Length: 95
Image 1 (cartoon, helix red, strand yellow):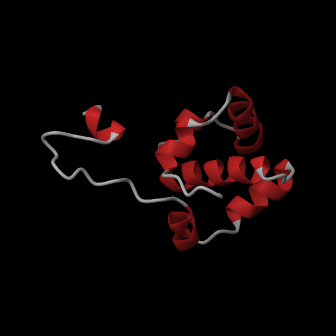
Image 2: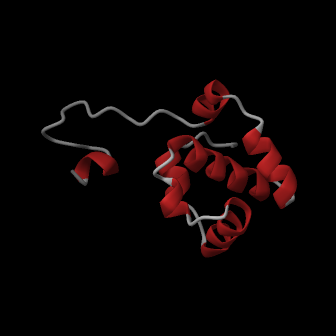
């Protein structure tokens, strides 16, 4: 990922074409994959690899070969709310 995004930001940037590719490759809707955080993040890595020119099999291979540590480091950390009672980040505003 050229601009390191959080997993939630990467999720929000998915297109319908990305969703179709995820379902075809991973056998489930991206929203269903959210129940398994590591698989969800691997699907997002898959999309990123596709956007960087990898074919679907190579993109899936790239996602599956990452260790859990590499997978976690792939995405930026979610921003902590400096004042939880007055959220500034979009995820914080939703609560």
